[in-house]
Amino acid sequence: MVGASNWRILAVHILPNVVSLILVAAGFDVVGAMLTEAGLSFLNFGLSIPIPSWGNLLSTSTGLFDTPWLVYPPALALLVTLLSVNWVVNGLRDAFDVRVTN
Image (cartoon, rainbow, N blue to C red; front, side, top):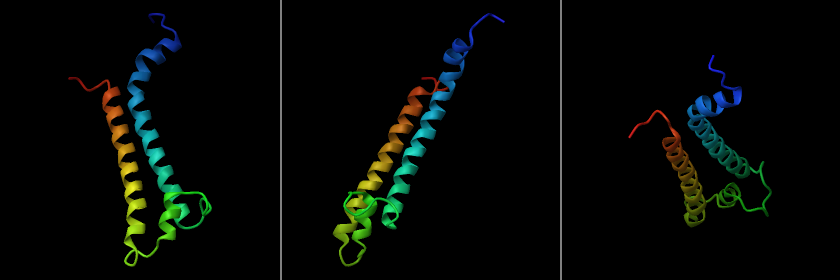
């Protein structure tokens, strides 16, 4: 009724309310893709052995009780990376959330 264009309505009213939701969905997609790649490489359906991957490192070191020093570093690196991606996305969601007031 005021005469605002469609682009102005999108940029001023809709986009600020949707940015946090898009960031959370993108973060879950990144974490899911990393877990899927590691899982498929662990099962030898993903990347081939010469290409370094956390799943390949975990699949070549299957002796958890015999050689734990080969299992823990790739698993810990994967865990730290997934948690850090999740924390960064959570921080960005809090920073871009328009409903939170200080």
